[in-house]
Amino acid sequence: MAGVSRNYWLTAYFVAGLAIGAVVLPSATWACALAVVLGLAGVVLFRGNHWRTGALLVAALALSLALLDAFADWLSPAPMGQGLMRTTQPRWWPPPDPILGFRPAPNSEVLNTATFDGEVVYRRTYHFDADAARVTPAAPSGASTYLFMGDSFIFGQGLLDDQSVAAQFAKANDFKVHTVNLGVPGNALNHLLRAFEAGLLDRYDSQHVKAVATWIIPAQLARVTGEGSWLGSSPRYVLEDGKLRYTGSFNQYRWFHPLAGLKYLLGQQFAFIDAIGRKQRQEEQIELYLAMLPRLQHYAREKFNAPLIAIYSWPDETSKPNYGVSEFAQSALVEVLGRIRNLGIPLLSVNVLSQPYHPSELLIPHDGHPNAFTNQMIAVELKRRLRPQ
Image (cartoon, rainbow, N blue to C red; front, top):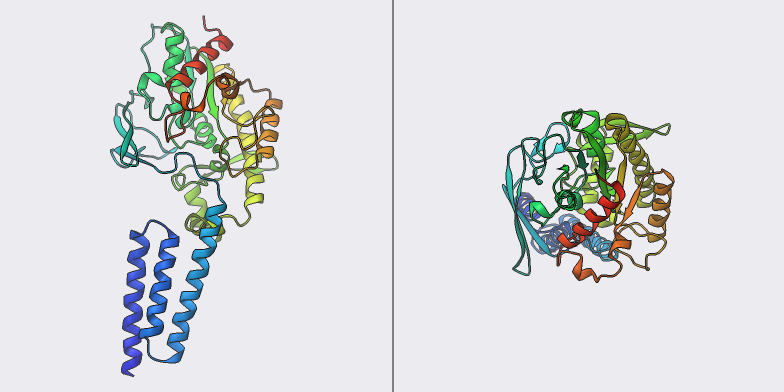
């Protein structure tokens, strides 16, 4: 009886240690490795063959999970900016938003620092105006307005306020146009659609909006189904009979569909679980994405009688093999871009603009985001395309 009581106490200590390790350790693989060690310790310390066999089974299962996850992680492409450490002050930024899940606060600022191997890559303060848009150069009263919506590429992550595409477009037009930078790092097309539907852009009705510009990259495909730890509170859309329908947030869906929620949580921890059903999930993401872009184009026309123009950093028919880093096959991405062209959305290729230059001249070191020079080239080409008066 004393031996059984001892086994229970040891089990409690082991479980507590594993729980602490899961919080402290950098990944689920390391937590599995800790479980292996604790399981082997149980084989030595437990009394009774049944207890020792159980501990050995736990160790074997944890080792299998660790090896599977390590193998799946090895097969996965390295994400953009791997090894770069980013911090913000305030720490939790962008702050929560009841409509979009997250977005900058009006009349605020944030300090963003990025380091690589202990060396500072950039240290930037981002400023936001009364409409929660990133600050751009002032414009004359009554000037035409151009809205820039999207993720960190439109936002200008790692750059000064006046180095974003929106700010550079104002400069290219001698500061005679009003540009609005509504980019937010981590945004998906979901956020852009919801901003229109929820009336967040109504304030620009009287501001002579001449165009809406966005920047599309392959990483956005996975975001439309909430594949990102920061997207839980973001708007969720589904396709029903070929039509988009807003259903609430991803978190709400996962709470009311526990199996889907559990699959997502486990997939966040274990790469091999995330790989289960990936092909079907990618097909769903592509169809959602291709339904969202024309809806966004429709909203721009309906609300502002303005065109939607899409800047793209995306493999096309002229791209060399192994262009960029993506979980999607390059051939699939080329096909998606072809379908986007067929939607009739004007496209501006960053690939074409950047052909004469080496990547080191176009990107922030170790980060992968476009630098000020790249944004300047895009702004000049946008001016040529849109011909602001």
